Length: 119
Image 1 (spheres, one colour):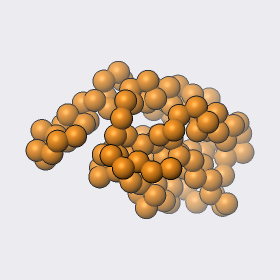
Image 2: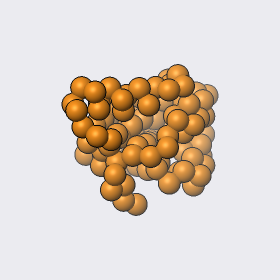
Image 3: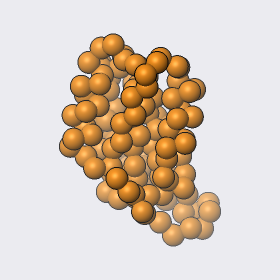
């Protein structure tokens, strides 16, 4: 999967988050129109998180899933996400977060205003 125009990579470390994960992913997916990728890093969850991740990966082409073979912790997951990211800019979201409507648009607008780069 190639995101040639990706400007923003949203990295979400996941560990046993089935209770909050659908709300988190819905709050993000409803806002994405273009130029954004979502990278899910499954840190060896033992609950239903992986099933939820796969459902969203199948539904949205801008979502990528990385499954770790060993539980490594949130910092390790973020670093894996950074190394896998295609975006020029990185945003971290925790799996129990919910983004407000317009959050991604505001991030992209602020990048444009601050760096003077056309998105």
